[in-house]
Length: 191
Image (cartoon, rainbow, N blue to C red; front, top):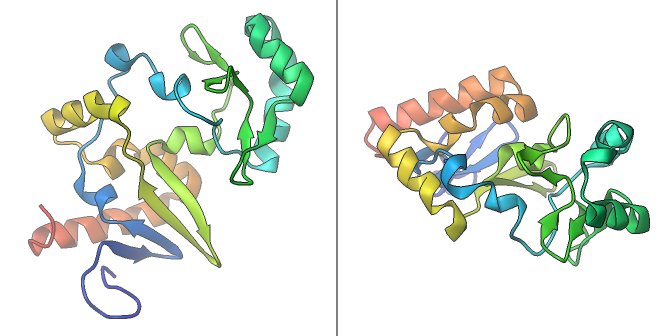
């Protein structure tokens, strides 16, 4: 399971079902420390969070419930371009304010009743690779406090993101990922 499909050697990517998982997701420690970072990943960036057409529909359906909680700037952006737009890479992403702040961020976090899966999975980023999906760990200096807390708690990235990984890929897939990680640790292939 933890072998490169082409070479048979242990590499930086493992295959779990039809998902290619970068080894950093199994080896790196991570635990959001929202009290310290204050959700800066929703405020700093050059594009919104990737969303699917179904998620756009869900966001549009929830607008009446959250509209009064949105800032005047957010309301203006949404009135002008909608809840999402196509970024420079051709991906559908949530609308942002001033080229960086998520339009759906309130004073105490996300105002959406259900976060887009890309937000829920962060700092794991998903990419379609033909018939497969690739998962990578997106390192960002604003998440340094999360790596420190993860190290203190000895909580690996895939463990911290158990709930969103199950939401996206299912319970059986997550169990297989855990089994692969445990086998690699037991064999001393990862620390």
